Length: 213
Image 1: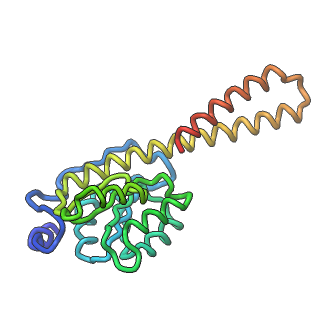
Image 2 (image 1 turned 180 degrees about the vertical axis):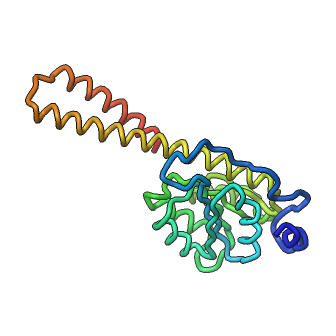
Image 3 (image 1 turned 30 degrees about the vertical axis):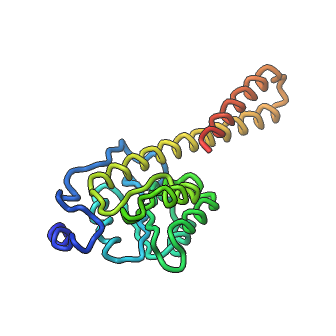
């Protein structure tokens, strides 16, 4: 794959001065959520060569899924959870901006980091502004430095997994509080003080949950 990657540099959106799969960019002490140990990354691009190039850079550290259209990406996100989405802007039928807006309307991808990929010729205020308004988290411009791509994806994957871990902990805390409250009620004990403390903990959990939204 490396030989193929290097020999096709001129036709791909990457700067290929370095081996794009050298070393491991992602370090994680086991899964933080129900996701696989290697975080899932979704690559969305209508050009097969670009999808292959992105996958070659990221496949060592991430579980990579590819989509050739915005419509397919939205469908995949309804079925699977992704830590990061790398999204091309220039696609037929449904461009990257429209896809990002649609993904932000789905609960499952409301907070998923989206890195929009586009040509360096589009690196101006209007494009960047539209991207952020559409829901982009960050941009990466062609020609892409493989190490920069890995760094961006790794950083956002770590942030997302920590966010999901915190959200899971808050939900587990809420579930435990609900069970304890139900058990105390069932036993008919005088639990005014205990209930007060439980309510304080629940308010704290709700505040943490609000901050993770």
